[in-house]
Figure 1 (cartoon, rainbow, N blue to C red):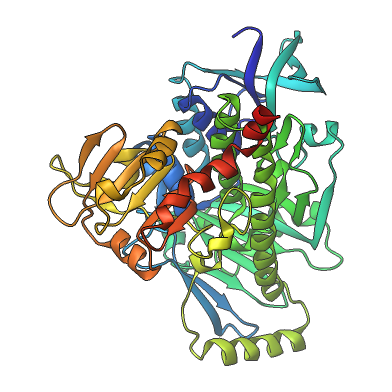
Figure 2: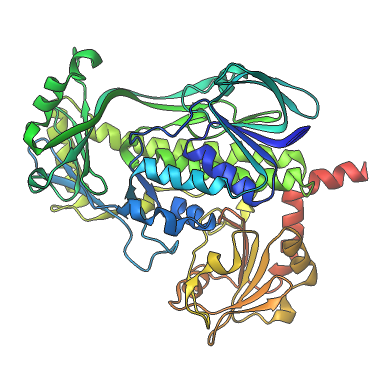
Length: 533
């Protein structure tokens, strides 16, 4: 590449890698730099959800990562006396996103599978062992100062820069962007253990939150023989003393002895709740841990970063192609910051339950939860804790399901069933019920959607799904998820964004006529105003 590239992505962790892959598959010229020569070899994240899996599917990598993922087990909350006080599970089938709602995974091979796929994208230039040292915004680009591992300095020019460089983000610091604290800072020791067969037989099969004031502890069932314990540090304890092998085995003694496995990794963290005050400043944007950090009690840390990538990739692509004005990028912060804050507040509330150190308050907490949730407690579903989008590039005044995730049904084809995205891709989609005839769809709306690289999908009742040409499909589902979803919300049509959030809906046939104007108003108004001026 020479001259000005479209996007420079700083950091090649999961968020940066997935953002780069999405941009590369859109044909956006992208340079990716990371100061490390290889992926981090030890696990940090251990779980992700069906939203992430759908993005992985859209990248064509679902089969590649399957060896490294297993279903997420139920989670039990045990009170001060060991009694079950709450229980969370994944949604039962049929799965609304087409996938098991949550997974446990091995992060290093998962990341490696994504990185390998980047080599197949001709518009991507991946530079490992290369560090960012400075950046400066100009009117039409950003100048980056970078340095290779051998000490060679270079200047790189990009129309946009996305800092995916973690919680200590240099991009964020160079831009002078501060962090808002959400009032959660708790020190924990995180220990990963590779457990042998003898040890595995001693351990719970479910994830357990030990809400014990004497030592709040999280036990996580990882994939294969990987198990994780997270121990809250008590007042007076230091990271240095608790991160010693003897101290770790003393904590693990409730479950294992050194003969039952080996410590794979142990480190101390302060579980923070932080969010950047700005996610976009001019041509520089933040994503992933550079933009936010959340306590781990909802297993949403990596998921939040992947949502950032999926939200930002299609908007950057439209802006860079000139199909939308740069103001579209302002919606990234409006949508994602509010979503992150809401999810983080829920994680904090769960954390407060777990982290209580006062025995009397813990006993009161246990009694309250059993009154509220029953004894034994009724099962709750994790996915119901994740909010939708409230504002931004969507028609929020229409009410639900605008801002919620669009389902992904299994589709009947003559060549064999597949998931919806595998047939029609991940782009703007207009989906209409079987009650709507093709002639009822306004031509202007078909042109608007297809011009953005989308498709018009007409739900049919029988036969096989088939292409009607010019980006239009007749789809036949096997399980009735989509038909039920349209019926439950009283819809005849839905317009869906490339990141699978519902943009607008039609509850009756005349509503279709307004959809094209709604789409144009959200994506193109600044361009039109500039032309009119």
